[in-house]
Image (tube, rainbow, N blue to C red; front, top):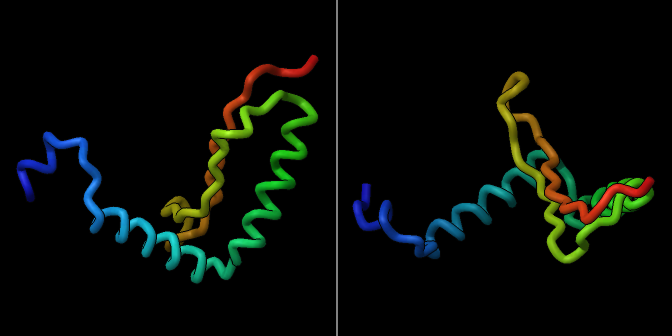
Length: 87
């Protein structure tokens, strides 16, 4: 373990590359294309925007894995900042 890494806020390129590779593997295992993920994101935003005003510049939707069920199951993670709820 690198002791300097603990106290540093610097993000190393090998960590970024590792995260990207993990995302690629997850997409391949789930057999979901980036276009399909964009369609899901668009549909989710359309539904949520009926009920709330959304901060569109900070939306993050990604595919990851979870060990909640048997094996590594794909999981959709959405971070959608809400400005206010529509009444």
